Image 1 (cartoon, rainbow, N blue to C red):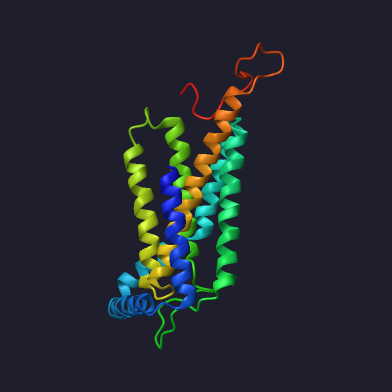
Image 2 (image 1 turned 180 degrees about the vertical axis):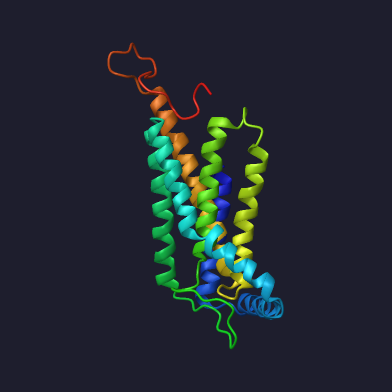
Length: 231
């Protein structure tokens, strides 16, 4: 997974630089895609309304954060305290980095004579895309550790997560409130946060497994169960 973290981080940094310096080919691509989708949104109001419902309610960042919070509460209740803190902490750090980048880059959203939707704050990166990626990634990680081998609905849930991540990115560009590169950056940064969270959690687990507990004869501590152990 380290290569995935490095690749997504490097790509996110590269895209950030290209947007910050206003690389003409990227801006031209963003503009052409956004204009084509905006024409479609104006021509198909029914489909546009479906996209608005999905982006404002089903895949809204607050919906995703509520899911992450619920997962953290369940983990805490199951006495998986460290995992609960990892889910909550990663979600909060992702939000903080997202807002910092928005303030740093200050990219304007698309402007239309006939807008079909509106949004606040700066455009880059897409908060919807990033939040959905972080939340869905963390939830799949937690579920895989606990129930992947025994729950037949795993494939369906993984598919729903992929559809949600890709779908919310589509809605943001289709509704004319983001450029395509905003969404791509949200996906890249969100995935990078997920992979870093998983890697650091595993690193902590390995350290805990080899650290002697007080009163032990040098063996690994056995005072508490670790996430996914014995399942």
